[in-house]
Length: 473
Ligand SMILES: O=C1OCCC/C1=C\Nc1ccccc1
Image: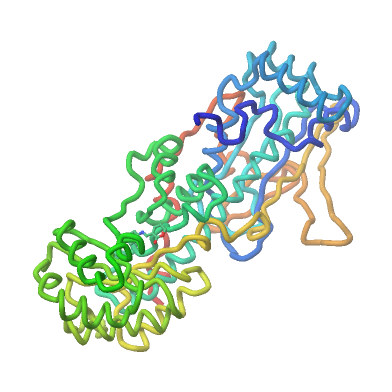
């Protein structure tokens, strides 16, 4: 244990093989290469920009070029290409003239900003004319921002759906931050990915079981505690009591966690029996006696979610009684709630909440857990994230660089020096150097190895807040 996640800490190795040969492919006397990152569109029309700071701190900030790393890269690439094409001179130049700090400037829209797709999100340029080849060397690791961005975006769209139903059927939206709980750790491709994606979800919510998100948010976003959870059962802690021991298993949960919230997965054998006869009759007194200072959260975990949730609520309403809230929707007593952690995704959420509403139930009664759909069921194409060169200086002459494939106009790239500006509160990307740098919403976050802006998690959460008024209708 203790080995680095990617099998390396050598940033010279954190790139695509073909990029190791690109310093030989630019025109002679190229002095500047400037590239940008954008979401070209995709599933959601707006995107939450999040996660660049992690990549900068993890890989690019500080004296990341050393003699040893150059030597290691030289040896590996000799083996990998079977020929000497490694840019040893270029890397030694960085070591000797920049003391191992990367001569790059990165400007980015503030973390947490929500803006329409097809806008420039960050730009990268070399600050030393000898290092023109460096700009795109780090495309590979910088484009991995697609993942935290897409998780934060998908999670935020779910927050808007839940907010809408709370506004329609609940007394308040106070519970919103806890309404979508991260169940996704095990479904992620790695502990590191879970930390990154889990943190991205916590931009919008505070409920999580992905502990690597807590440590990632603390280490990379200075957030002392970014998320919360509660005592909860899993099937093994119920089924080890035997099929006829479920009541004892449930009673044990109430006794071991006498106050606060406690969640019990209740579908091991028969969810209807568990809710009606066990929670609703045999253990009813122990549930009711928790009163205001203890809430049992019943967790179904199978069946068609929209139907299961309403049927569970009907049984619980029958056993524990209901009241009507200020919006005229049914509520259960404060000591019993439901969490649905199976089959939850952006696509399934509204159907569940709509079915509850149609049957007169307040959305306040239900929380959701989401795993694979929250942290893993997405790729770089979900939001069409791309990194392209838009500007270069060659022989001292400025060139607006672009691609415009006749075979896919959707892949046309932006030209020239770019700024992100606001016109009547709308974001606009100004191209070909026609923008006003003084109006650029993108700020320098990285320059010559130094992090110039360290976003706090509360600042990011504030930037990404949903518009509650808009979710009223
Ligand atoms: O089922 C699960 O699978 C994956 C990991 C978490 C998890 C459940 N946790 C939980 C937390 C708070 C309230 C209820 C459940």
